[in-house]
Amino acid sequence: MASSSHNGKNSHAPATPAGSPEAVQEEAGEFLTTAQGLRLPDTDHSLKVGQRGPTLMEDFHLREKITHFDHERIPERVVHARGAAAHGIFESYGTGRSVTKAGFLASKGLRTDVFVRFSTVLGSRGSADTVRDTRGFAVKFYAPEGTFDLVGNNMPVFFIQDGIKFPDVIHAAKPQPDLEIPGAQSAHDTFWDFASLHTEATHHVLWNMSDRGIPRSYLHLRARQVL
Image 1 (cartoon, rainbow, N blue to C red):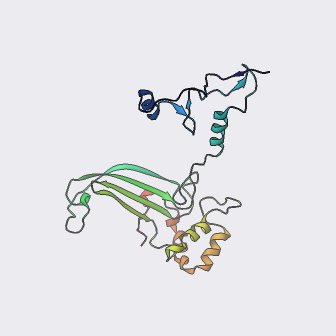
Image 2: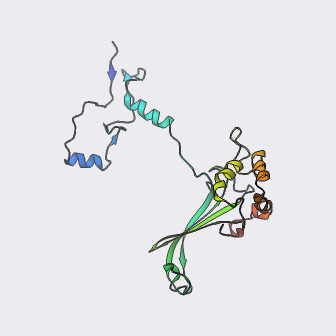
Image 3: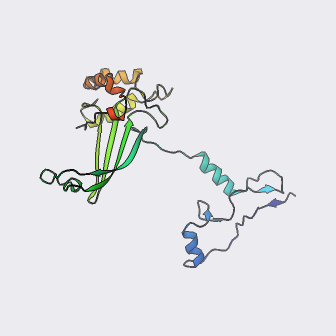
């Protein structure tokens, strides 16, 4: 009968009393555990028959670790998944107290942390920045009262008039699900079917076919809010 080398693993370790220093250390994340909370002294070696034998399927940690890996999916945004961003400081050069309640505009010289994001709409994380597409932007002001989020596109119009059609236009413009092409742009029959059936999209299509669809740089993005 073949012998089994456990390489330091011990599935019969005594339970740690609640409230003890060891339990507090475990809760602080000092030890690796299985998904069921069993402490793992070793996660780098699987159970094997002898020193050089085959791996044993009775190694529950190996099966759990590989199963988790096989099912890993890192989600991305449905739209605006590709872009670039930067942190900075916004400094107010005038007083806007008479026209706004926003505290970061209320006094001259007030400095507020800000985060700016530019992105394409349709492309996935690995798509190109040079495709013809509507560009989006977001500016977050981290003010003491809370976060002021300014969001918009570089187009003065939009494909739809009713928000209930938003999932439809995005599904139509995304790459075809059977081919995953073309990437990050809507040059396929699915989108043109939508555009032909919803003529309100014509205005935005014309804007997209202009130079606004392929801006030269982030500096050339004319930001507009979509109302």
